[in-house]
Image 1 (cartoon, rainbow, N blue to C red):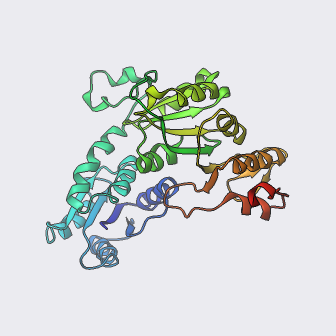
Image 2: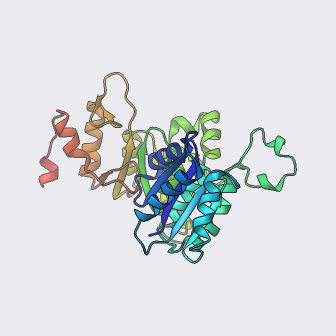
Length: 328
Protein backbone atom coordinates (compact mmCIF):
# COMPACT_ATOMS: atom_id res chain seq x y z
CA UNK A 1 0.00 0.00 0.00
CA UNK A 2 1.20 3.50 -0.82
CA UNK A 3 1.94 5.48 2.32
CA UNK A 4 0.57 9.03 2.49
CA UNK A 5 2.21 11.94 4.29
CA UNK A 6 -0.02 14.99 4.72
CA UNK A 7 2.13 18.04 5.48
CA UNK A 8 1.13 21.63 6.15
CA UNK A 9 1.84 24.92 7.82
CA UNK A 10 0.18 24.70 11.25
CA UNK A 11 -2.55 22.23 12.19
CA UNK A 12 -4.21 22.03 8.76
CA UNK A 13 -2.73 18.58 8.11
CA UNK A 14 -4.16 17.14 11.31
CA UNK A 15 -7.55 18.73 10.66
CA UNK A 16 -7.94 17.40 7.13
CA UNK A 17 -6.74 13.97 8.28
CA UNK A 18 -9.55 13.93 10.84
CA UNK A 19 -12.08 15.09 8.22
CA UNK A 20 -10.96 12.36 5.83
CA UNK A 21 -11.40 9.74 8.56
CA UNK A 22 -14.95 10.93 9.24
CA UNK A 23 -15.88 10.47 5.58
CA UNK A 24 -13.80 7.48 4.44
CA UNK A 25 -12.97 5.75 7.72
CA UNK A 26 -9.69 5.31 9.57
CA UNK A 27 -6.76 4.69 7.24
CA UNK A 28 -3.54 2.74 7.67
CA UNK A 29 -0.19 4.23 6.69
CA UNK A 30 -1.36 7.84 6.63
CA UNK A 31 0.45 10.42 8.77
CA UNK A 32 -0.05 14.13 9.34
CA UNK A 33 3.05 16.31 9.68
CA UNK A 34 2.70 19.87 10.95
CA UNK A 35 5.17 22.73 10.65
CA UNK A 36 4.67 24.98 13.64
CA UNK A 37 5.77 28.63 14.12
CA UNK A 38 8.43 27.72 16.70
CA UNK A 39 10.09 25.13 14.44
CA UNK A 40 12.76 25.36 11.78
CA UNK A 41 13.34 23.50 8.51
CA UNK A 42 15.52 20.89 10.23
CA UNK A 43 12.72 20.06 12.67
CA UNK A 44 10.31 19.67 9.78
CA UNK A 45 12.71 17.40 7.90
CA UNK A 46 12.97 15.14 10.98
CA UNK A 47 9.17 14.96 11.26
CA UNK A 48 8.87 13.96 7.60
CA UNK A 49 11.59 11.33 7.84
CA UNK A 50 10.00 9.85 10.96
CA UNK A 51 6.65 9.63 9.19
CA UNK A 52 8.20 7.81 6.24
CA UNK A 53 10.14 5.45 8.51
CA UNK A 54 6.86 4.37 10.07
CA UNK A 55 5.63 3.02 6.72
CA UNK A 56 8.47 0.55 6.12
CA UNK A 57 11.57 0.78 3.98
CA UNK A 58 9.99 -0.67 0.81
CA UNK A 59 6.83 1.45 0.76
CA UNK A 60 5.95 3.94 -1.93
CA UNK A 61 5.18 7.39 -0.50
CA UNK A 62 2.83 10.13 -1.66
CA UNK A 63 3.25 13.61 -0.17
CA UNK A 64 0.08 15.69 -0.07
CA UNK A 65 1.15 19.27 0.67
CA UNK A 66 -0.77 22.46 1.36
CA UNK A 67 1.30 24.94 -0.66
CA UNK A 68 3.84 24.80 -3.48
CA UNK A 69 7.06 26.53 -2.50
CA UNK A 70 6.44 26.57 1.27
CA UNK A 71 8.60 24.82 3.84
CA UNK A 72 6.54 21.58 3.91
CA UNK A 73 6.93 21.36 0.12
CA UNK A 74 10.62 22.28 0.16
CA UNK A 75 11.56 19.67 2.75
CA UNK A 76 9.39 17.01 1.15
CA UNK A 77 10.93 17.84 -2.22
CA UNK A 78 14.43 17.36 -0.81
CA UNK A 79 13.44 13.84 0.28
CA UNK A 80 11.66 13.18 -3.02
CA UNK A 81 14.80 14.09 -5.01
CA UNK A 82 16.56 11.16 -3.34
CA UNK A 83 13.74 8.66 -4.05
CA UNK A 84 12.10 9.78 -7.30
CA UNK A 85 11.21 6.25 -8.36
CA UNK A 86 9.08 5.56 -5.27
CA UNK A 87 7.74 8.99 -4.25
CA UNK A 88 5.50 11.72 -5.62
CA UNK A 89 4.28 15.13 -4.44
CA UNK A 90 0.94 16.87 -5.01
CA UNK A 91 0.30 20.36 -3.63
CA UNK A 92 -2.88 22.39 -3.20
CA UNK A 93 -4.39 19.69 -1.00
CA UNK A 94 -8.17 19.76 -0.50
CA UNK A 95 -10.58 17.22 0.97
CA UNK A 96 -11.84 15.76 -2.35
CA UNK A 97 -8.21 15.15 -3.34
CA UNK A 98 -7.49 13.35 -0.06
CA UNK A 99 -10.58 11.16 -0.34
CA UNK A 100 -9.67 10.24 -3.91
CA UNK A 101 -6.15 9.33 -2.77
CA UNK A 102 -7.63 6.99 -0.16
CA UNK A 103 -9.90 5.41 -2.75
CA UNK A 104 -7.12 5.10 -5.33
CA UNK A 105 -4.96 3.08 -2.96
CA UNK A 106 -7.47 0.24 -3.33
CA UNK A 107 -6.61 -0.23 -7.01
CA UNK A 108 -3.37 1.67 -7.77
CA UNK A 109 -0.03 0.47 -6.46
CA UNK A 110 2.39 3.34 -7.04
CA UNK A 111 2.70 6.88 -5.74
CA UNK A 112 3.15 8.15 -9.31
CA UNK A 113 -0.12 6.58 -10.49
CA UNK A 114 -2.10 7.98 -7.57
CA UNK A 115 -0.56 11.45 -7.90
CA UNK A 116 -1.54 11.65 -11.56
CA UNK A 117 -5.03 10.35 -10.87
CA UNK A 118 -6.03 12.64 -7.99
CA UNK A 119 -5.26 15.93 -9.76
CA UNK A 120 -8.60 15.89 -11.54
CA UNK A 121 -10.57 15.26 -8.34
CA UNK A 122 -8.78 18.09 -6.58
CA UNK A 123 -9.70 20.50 -9.37
CA UNK A 124 -13.27 19.19 -9.63
CA UNK A 125 -13.72 19.90 -5.93
CA UNK A 126 -13.40 23.65 -6.55
CA UNK A 127 -16.89 24.96 -7.35
CA UNK A 128 -18.74 28.21 -6.96
CA UNK A 129 -22.26 29.50 -6.36
CA UNK A 130 -23.81 31.41 -7.98
CA UNK A 131 -22.47 29.59 -11.03
CA UNK A 132 -22.56 32.80 -13.05
CA UNK A 133 -19.51 34.04 -11.14
CA UNK A 134 -17.42 31.39 -12.86
CA UNK A 135 -17.90 33.12 -16.22
CA UNK A 136 -16.15 31.22 -18.97
CA UNK A 137 -13.47 29.89 -16.66
CA UNK A 138 -12.85 26.33 -17.82
CA UNK A 139 -11.48 25.58 -14.38
CA UNK A 140 -15.09 25.50 -13.19
CA UNK A 141 -16.29 23.16 -15.92
CA UNK A 142 -17.32 20.70 -13.23
CA UNK A 143 -20.13 22.92 -11.92
CA UNK A 144 -23.08 20.69 -11.01
CA UNK A 145 -25.91 20.47 -13.51
CA UNK A 146 -29.49 19.33 -12.92
CA UNK A 147 -29.72 15.55 -12.98
CA UNK A 148 -31.39 14.30 -16.14
CA UNK A 149 -34.50 12.18 -15.86
CA UNK A 150 -33.88 8.46 -15.56
CA UNK A 151 -34.11 6.85 -18.97
CA UNK A 152 -35.05 3.22 -19.41
CA UNK A 153 -32.25 1.34 -21.07
CA UNK A 154 -31.18 -2.26 -21.24
CA UNK A 155 -33.03 -5.49 -20.69
CA UNK A 156 -33.20 -7.36 -17.42
CA UNK A 157 -33.42 -6.74 -13.70
CA UNK A 158 -32.35 -3.45 -12.17
CA UNK A 159 -29.30 -3.98 -9.95
CA UNK A 160 -28.95 -2.48 -6.48
CA UNK A 161 -25.31 -1.65 -5.74
CA UNK A 162 -26.22 -0.56 -2.22
CA UNK A 163 -29.43 0.07 -0.28
CA UNK A 164 -28.71 2.43 2.60
CA UNK A 165 -30.87 3.75 5.43
CA UNK A 166 -29.58 7.15 6.53
CA UNK A 167 -31.63 10.06 7.84
CA UNK A 168 -29.02 12.41 6.35
CA UNK A 169 -29.57 10.86 2.91
CA UNK A 170 -26.89 12.10 0.49
CA UNK A 171 -23.86 13.51 2.32
CA UNK A 172 -20.08 13.22 2.29
CA UNK A 173 -19.78 9.58 3.36
CA UNK A 174 -22.21 8.50 0.65
CA UNK A 175 -21.03 10.84 -2.10
CA UNK A 176 -17.43 9.79 -1.68
CA UNK A 177 -16.72 6.62 0.30
CA UNK A 178 -19.76 4.55 -0.61
CA UNK A 179 -20.15 5.65 -4.22
CA UNK A 180 -16.49 4.88 -4.88
CA UNK A 181 -16.85 1.52 -3.17
CA UNK A 182 -19.96 0.22 -4.94
CA UNK A 183 -19.72 2.13 -8.27
CA UNK A 184 -23.38 2.91 -9.00
CA UNK A 185 -24.56 4.37 -12.29
CA UNK A 186 -26.97 6.57 -10.33
CA UNK A 187 -27.68 7.62 -6.74
CA UNK A 188 -31.41 7.51 -6.04
CA UNK A 189 -33.05 9.02 -2.98
CA UNK A 190 -36.34 7.19 -2.38
CA UNK A 191 -38.69 9.35 -0.34
CA UNK A 192 -42.22 10.67 -0.82
CA UNK A 193 -41.48 13.57 1.53
CA UNK A 194 -38.31 14.70 -0.23
CA UNK A 195 -39.82 14.21 -3.69
CA UNK A 196 -42.42 16.87 -2.80
CA UNK A 197 -39.86 19.33 -1.43
CA UNK A 198 -38.18 21.23 -4.28
CA UNK A 199 -35.50 22.79 -2.06
CA UNK A 200 -34.40 19.46 -0.58
CA UNK A 201 -34.46 17.87 -4.04
CA UNK A 202 -32.21 20.60 -5.40
CA UNK A 203 -29.75 20.33 -2.52
CA UNK A 204 -29.53 16.57 -2.87
CA UNK A 205 -28.95 16.52 -6.62
CA UNK A 206 -26.23 19.16 -6.28
CA UNK A 207 -24.50 17.12 -3.56
CA UNK A 208 -23.85 14.20 -5.91
CA UNK A 209 -20.23 13.52 -6.88
CA UNK A 210 -19.29 14.82 -10.37
CA UNK A 211 -19.15 11.37 -11.96
CA UNK A 212 -22.55 10.14 -10.69
CA UNK A 213 -25.98 11.73 -11.17
CA UNK A 214 -28.55 11.79 -8.38
CA UNK A 215 -32.33 11.66 -8.53
CA UNK A 216 -35.13 11.90 -5.98
CA UNK A 217 -38.17 9.72 -6.57
CA UNK A 218 -41.24 8.65 -4.57
CA UNK A 219 -41.48 5.06 -3.33
CA UNK A 220 -44.08 4.02 -5.90
CA UNK A 221 -41.76 5.18 -8.69
CA UNK A 222 -39.01 2.89 -7.39
CA UNK A 223 -41.45 -0.03 -7.34
CA UNK A 224 -42.47 0.79 -10.92
CA UNK A 225 -38.85 0.97 -12.07
CA UNK A 226 -37.99 -2.27 -10.27
CA UNK A 227 -40.59 -4.15 -12.29
CA UNK A 228 -39.54 -2.53 -15.58
CA UNK A 229 -36.99 -4.75 -17.41
CA UNK A 230 -35.80 -1.79 -19.47
CA UNK A 231 -33.73 -0.62 -16.49
CA UNK A 232 -31.59 -3.77 -16.53
CA UNK A 233 -28.35 -1.90 -17.29
CA UNK A 234 -28.67 0.40 -14.28
CA UNK A 235 -26.95 0.01 -10.90
CA UNK A 236 -28.65 2.10 -8.25
CA UNK A 237 -27.34 3.24 -4.91
CA UNK A 238 -30.63 3.61 -3.02
CA UNK A 239 -30.97 5.99 -0.09
CA UNK A 240 -33.89 5.76 2.33
CA UNK A 241 -34.72 8.21 5.11
CA UNK A 242 -36.83 5.93 7.32
CA UNK A 243 -37.19 2.18 7.90
CA UNK A 244 -40.88 2.52 7.02
CA UNK A 245 -39.93 3.73 3.52
CA UNK A 246 -37.71 0.68 3.08
CA UNK A 247 -40.56 -1.59 4.18
CA UNK A 248 -42.96 -0.02 1.66
CA UNK A 249 -40.45 -0.67 -1.13
CA UNK A 250 -39.90 -4.28 -0.04
CA UNK A 251 -43.64 -4.89 0.29
CA UNK A 252 -43.99 -3.53 -3.24
CA UNK A 253 -41.71 -6.25 -4.55
CA UNK A 254 -38.29 -4.53 -4.51
CA UNK A 255 -35.73 -7.18 -3.54
CA UNK A 256 -33.30 -5.76 -0.99
CA UNK A 257 -31.19 -8.65 0.31
CA UNK A 258 -29.10 -6.42 2.56
CA UNK A 259 -29.73 -2.99 4.07
CA UNK A 260 -26.78 -0.86 5.06
CA UNK A 261 -27.65 1.35 8.03
CA UNK A 262 -25.68 4.56 8.51
CA UNK A 263 -27.59 6.87 10.84
CA UNK A 264 -31.06 7.49 12.25
CA UNK A 265 -31.58 10.89 13.81
CA UNK A 266 -32.74 11.20 17.40
CA UNK A 267 -36.11 12.78 18.14
CA UNK A 268 -38.59 12.75 21.00
CA UNK A 269 -39.59 9.22 21.97
CA UNK A 270 -36.62 7.53 20.35
CA UNK A 271 -33.87 5.57 22.11
CA UNK A 272 -30.22 5.70 21.11
CA UNK A 273 -28.93 2.17 20.46
CA UNK A 274 -25.47 3.42 19.52
CA UNK A 275 -23.97 6.86 18.98
CA UNK A 276 -25.72 7.46 15.62
CA UNK A 277 -28.84 5.27 15.63
CA UNK A 278 -32.10 6.18 17.39
CA UNK A 279 -35.23 4.01 17.18
CA UNK A 280 -38.68 3.70 18.71
CA UNK A 281 -41.14 0.79 18.96
CA UNK A 282 -42.50 1.45 15.47
CA UNK A 283 -38.99 1.35 14.00
CA UNK A 284 -38.23 -1.90 15.83
CA UNK A 285 -41.41 -3.55 14.51
CA UNK A 286 -40.50 -2.37 11.02
CA UNK A 287 -37.00 -3.85 11.29
CA UNK A 288 -38.54 -7.12 12.50
CA UNK A 289 -40.81 -7.12 9.45
CA UNK A 290 -37.84 -6.50 7.13
CA UNK A 291 -35.88 -9.27 8.84
CA UNK A 292 -38.79 -11.67 8.38
CA UNK A 293 -38.87 -10.72 4.68
CA UNK A 294 -35.27 -11.88 4.38
CA UNK A 295 -33.46 -8.54 4.64
CA UNK A 296 -30.05 -8.69 6.34
CA UNK A 297 -28.70 -5.68 8.22
CA UNK A 298 -25.24 -4.17 7.87
CA UNK A 299 -24.60 -1.37 10.38
CA UNK A 300 -21.66 0.65 9.03
CA UNK A 301 -21.06 4.36 8.50
CA UNK A 302 -18.33 3.85 5.88
CA UNK A 303 -17.00 0.82 3.97
CA UNK A 304 -13.84 0.67 6.10
CA UNK A 305 -15.83 0.12 9.31
CA UNK A 306 -16.49 -3.36 10.68
CA UNK A 307 -20.01 -4.56 9.92
CA UNK A 308 -22.39 -5.02 12.85
CA UNK A 309 -25.79 -6.71 13.00
CA UNK A 310 -28.69 -4.50 14.02
CA UNK A 311 -30.84 -6.89 16.04
CA UNK A 312 -28.36 -7.56 18.89
CA UNK A 313 -27.97 -3.79 19.26
CA UNK A 314 -31.74 -3.36 19.55
CA UNK A 315 -31.97 -6.14 22.14
CA UNK A 316 -29.14 -4.67 24.17
CA UNK A 317 -31.02 -1.35 24.29
CA UNK A 318 -33.92 -3.08 26.04
CA UNK A 319 -36.43 -3.62 23.23
CA UNK A 320 -38.37 -6.89 23.13
CA UNK A 321 -38.10 -8.76 19.85
CA UNK A 322 -40.31 -11.46 18.41
CA UNK A 323 -37.86 -14.09 17.21
CA UNK A 324 -40.52 -16.65 16.24
CA UNK A 325 -40.28 -16.21 12.47
CA UNK A 326 -36.53 -15.82 12.62
CA UNK A 327 -36.23 -19.26 14.27
CA UNK A 328 -38.58 -20.79 11.72
